[in-house]
Length: 133
Image 1: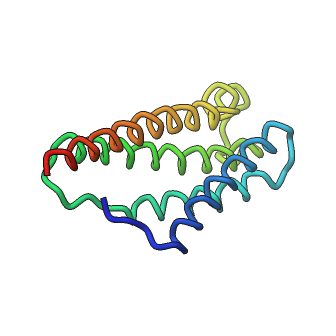
Image 2: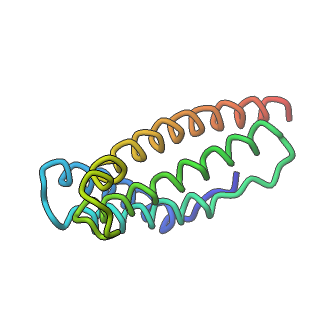
């Protein structure tokens, strides 16, 4: 995997921190939390996409695709946080509550589980690959 520079690493960590703060304050009902989460998600996702794998290991390539899927879920959670602020899609109240209201939590949970799995497995596979060389 391509290593990030120091600045990119700081952006990645700051983005993750802003995502945690944004999600936490959203649960407390603060109105500015989707903005904080979104800024963090964009920073985190953009830095993760900078890390590329140029090798030929099929397992690591598959895990990178899973990680990209989790990045998409992080961004989807940001969009759903904004949609949670009000019925911006003009849906009926029942449809809005059924399909939109607080569904960002589900997208965030899916993204976090996929991120944990892929990060752990990529580290393990990279160690195994380094032992072969």
